[in-house]
Amino acid sequence: MKRREFLGYTALGAVGAASAALLGGCDTGEPKVKFWQHGNFRPVTEEVAVTDLKVQGQIPPELNGLYVRNGTNTSRGVAEHFFGGDGMLHGVRLENGQAKWYRNRYVNTPLYRDEGGGFGSTNGEDTTSAVSLIHHGGRLMSLGEFGYPYLINPDDLSTLGAFNYDGKLTGNMTAHPRIDPVTGELLFFGYNVMEPYLTYMRADAAGNLVQVEPITLTGPSMVHDFAATERYVVFMEMPVRFSWLAAISGSALPFKWDGNAPTRVGVMPRTGGDADIRWFDIPPCFVFHIMNSFERGDDVIVDAARYDQLWVKNSHDFFHPARLSRFTMNMRTGQASVEQIYGEAMEFPQVNRSQWTRPYRYGYSLVVDEKNDSPERIAQAQGGIRKYDVETGAVDSYLPGPELTPGEAIFIAARDGAAEDEGYLASFEYNKNTRTSAFCLFDATRVSAGPIASVPLPVRVPVGFHAVWVPDDVA
Ligand SMILES: [Fe+2]
Image (cartoon, rainbow, N blue to C red; front, side, top):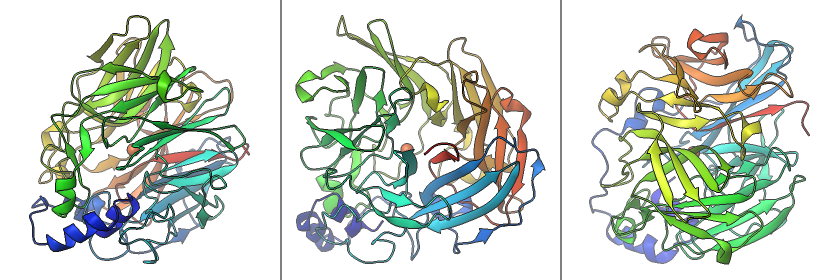
């Protein structure tokens, strides 16, 4: 994503863009070490399709479907920000215990084709679509946080085109929608730097957009994720905000910490509107990702990766630890509390998605190496996957050492009606020595035992963002 493109599709228009051009020589706060140009953060240069894949260990034969992950991969030049590349999908097709193919493909957007976009564009098609995917209403959608979703063909990862719910989606769509596992509804939102700063939306199980509600925030906050429970949706308005000053100074992603902005959590009935929201003030913090959320009595509970602060200097400033924390909003008393659940740094929280919106016991995340959590030392960082029992506080961690680095691990149930943690974790793991990656499956009841199946790939899968599992037996 180039600066002009960001300004374009956040609907800032010509004012910010022209100012940025005039002030092009200003300090943009770019870090000395652009970590996203090094190691496995570097983009790959080819789209490949590989069919002759060997399996080490055993892929459970009942796992038939597509695992596919999104991430940024700039197609030209150098991205100005870690989030700035074009969307690239990396997929592995599983069938009867075999890995039938791996392929990687760009999401074919106007920005990828270097068409459209640019100054003043408010076209929802102008997105890099680089953050995540969701499968809902029979559609596999690539999501970019800004702009519309893109429909993807699960058979070959080709792009079918932008999708705006027959014109009902009027603006951006989050990369973190939630599906209610009982009703099948898709609950989501979009945020923008102009009013309405946030819009809540709800689609029925068939994928028809049935509710659109503008939501009042106090300012243009970055809202990456949100929470849903059986009866409520939860919006987190936090002090990372769009900054005009950063924009006119030429920031590639002009959001930063605003110490004067409030930190508050809004709880709204899922079929309600702006006037129905109850806001709860909480101590300053920031959240990219929510693990899960549910109700218990009068409490609405949200478990999330909580940062004390983020992007104080600029939006390249990722290197602060997030810790799993519980946000509790009491609907009777109007009081909120925040408590840390686990002390070690983490990110990319996940759960069995059949527990989305409902009480749960088990969560999963990436291990973050706090000692090496800096642009200069990130190559030495030792990653891993951690399982949490949020009832007992117990953890079980896969810590493969300095050579191997797994990415986000998503949960795939072993079968319908299985126990909450009876299933598998799926992830791409990078090998620093061979500079190639493998698709890995872990038994979610024995995470520390390491992969039960590994599919070595002849290529590297760069560090990326979020994945989805698309089973064959779901429409
Ligand atoms: Fe995310």
